[in-house]
Structure formats: structure tokens, C-alpha cells
Length: 492
Image (cartoon, rainbow, N blue to C red; front, side, top):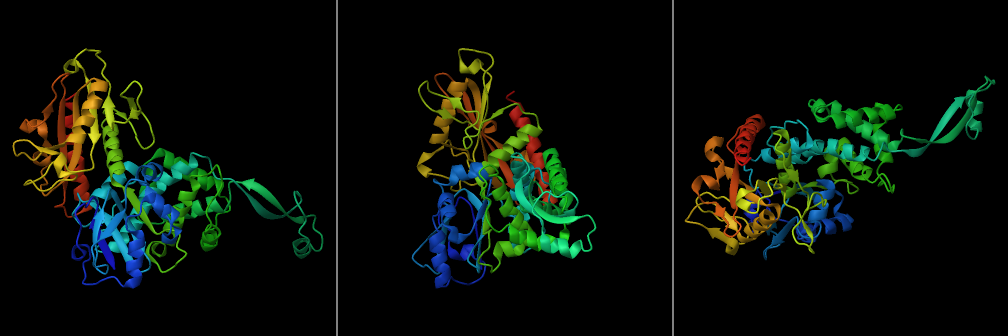
């Protein structure tokens, strides 16, 4: 059974819309669903009965989501056919042996998850074309390959994993206890050699061997070279792993997998544990995602939609050489102090004023805030968030929420920014980017602050669902990015 829903559904999605076939949950499935309903990432990690989950971005997403957000909630009085609420989390995972759940982006109605694929390609520097297939079960495995370079690079930043390994030798350089049985078997009559075994602290161990087997498996795939060739750090780290695993033997893959089923608990090499999980998921392929094995170490993969959207915009700005500071409230980087005795706040992207003027109107500071929610709508449909916090000016389709306005005013005042922009998304059926990218300045519906002054606008980026292939979608997004960057440059 496959349950398919969109993220950020604050109005319950009925059972009939979430499940394509006419079916219902049995008592065992209802119990599993109730146990999973409303659980946060922190609660998920504490309840090992659901299995282990991969979370992307690994560290920052977990910090952001572990307490405040849930993956989904089941609601309604009919427990056999419940309705569903979702938050910012997207993902693919299983509940028991028979129930699979897919939470995809609400801005992508193509049914192929092109938007999620495209963002991951840009953020992870991996050029993989998703499978053009109607099988929903393949989604989980498509996304695993995007994560491997990032997890590998994070682990290698801690150094190549070293561990003590017992090795057996038969030579003249005795460095450990003599293995009498092997010595008699191999060296009778005596030939000058001694059979012995010793413990070595080496990079050629079961963990690096697991990573090497994963690398070689990905290389054997049709698009395997795309995973490693798009990033210099990834290429270097792959070469380091290959050089460290001189005893690699393709035929020992099952043995290496069996040796790595236990978690890595080393106090220094902490980044190798998520890499180990990912390698097992890739090497064991579909069994790891939706198989009947109850000892399955990977139950699913989860994405923080807001974090991924922010990282995608940062990549677009970097590629187009837009000089903005990218702060990160999840990792507490590049923050701005608003009050003398207060805390530090984190606008997504900003540029401080360099003119030192006394009025904001004459300053050249700039603030951008990435909103993974819909601030522009077609035909005045309901938008994200609390309807009471929406101001509709003159019947237009741009919506400024009060909390967003106050947040931007605080940033503008502190950074001496004369302009600020909220960057949001909306689903579009128009493949003409020039006519579908929306900017509140074009309609005169932006906000101009009184007092110190300053302007607040919205740019709504269209995500087109009327495409026939991922290549067509990628071309569309590239054109959209160029048009979007041209708008941003108008302020510089």
C-alpha cells in the first residue's frame, strides 16, 4: 500500500486522495500509523522500533526540526481510513512491511518529483537524471545517490577512518605471535618464513572497505560517473578511499556488509555513522528500503523542505556571483545582533550598508529572506499559514504576513537596508518564465515603510508542472534562475 501526500498540508488530506486504490488499513497497520503520527525527528531517533532514518541536510535539519515540527499526523475518527496533516518535512519511508509513505513538495504536481530532484542536484553537485518510470517505489533509491558525495565529504573532513585490524602474514619479518598451526601447514619443510598474526592501526578496515564497495557499485551504474565528477572535493576523497583500501576484493561484498551491521561508536569519527547507514542502503538496494527484513537499518529518507530551498538559493547566488552573506540559523553562522543586550538573529541573505548614511533611503544594504511557503496565489486561493495574518491589498494576489513584515523591518533597520525581498514559490502551468515570474514591484503592491523608510517586495518563483521530462524541467529552471537573478541585480 502506498500513501502519497504533499508537504505543508494544514488542512487534512482525505484518505481517498492519499491512496490511489480502494483499500483500508488493518489493525496492525493502524497501530503502526498511530505510533508514527505526530512524531518529531527527535522522537523518531529515540524510538528505534521504526528503524533508522537518513535526514538531509543531516546536522542542520535535525537541529531545526527535531522538536518543533512533525513528519505527519493522522486525524479523523475512522482509523482504517484516516486523513493526514503534514509540515515542512518531505520524504520516502515505510511503516512495517506493507505500508509505504511518500511526502513530496506541494509545488511539484508533475508526479515525478522533478523539483525535489533538481534542488538536490544543485545543492549536492550531482548530475543524476531521475528514472522516467511510473513506479513510485523507485523514489527512495533515486535520492540515495544524491546524498552519498555530501556524506562522504563530511566523513573525510575528519580524516580517513582508522581502526585496529588483525592481519595474518607468512614472511621473514616477524611482528607478532607465531601462528603455530599455519606455520606447520605452510612452512614444512622449513623455508625460512614464519607464519604469525599482528594487530595494525590502518585505514584499510571494514568501514573504509564498505565505503569502497559503495563507490565501486555506483561506478558500475550507467550514470555512476556523474556522482563523483561534479565536485573536486568528492573526486579527491574517492581517490583517498581507493588508495587506502588496497585489499579490496569485489567478491567480498556480502562479508563486508555483514561486518558493518553494528553502529560506529568512535568518539572522533562521528560523521562515519551516517555514511555507514547510507552505504548499507545503497549496497543492499531495494531490500533496505521496503523489504521484509525486520533488522533493516534504513527505514526511509527525510528532507527539510525549508532548509533545502534556502541552500538551493544560496547555490544559485554563488553560481551567478551575487555577493551576499548567507547566514544559517541552524548552524548559528553569520548572524546579526539587533539589540544591544539581546540575542543574535539570522536573515537568510543580506548585504550590510557601505555608505554610512543617516537615512535608510540613501543606504545600499539589502536583505533577502527565503520563504518555503506561498505568498502569491492564483485566483485568490487559500495560502499557507494563518489567514488572520494576511493583508490583501486591493484584491491583488500578493500576500504579506504580518510576522514577515515585522521581521524584515527589524533586519532593514539594523543593517541599514533600503530594500528587502521575500522570495517564495508557487505552482505554475505556464512554461513562459518571463510572464510567470511574479514581482510585487511590477504591480505597485510592495510595501514602503514610514519613519526611516525602506521597501519590502515579494518575488514569487514559478515551478512549472506542465513538462514531459526532467531535461525539459531543468532547462525551464535554468531560464527561471537567469530571469530571477536579473531581477535581483536591479537593486545592486
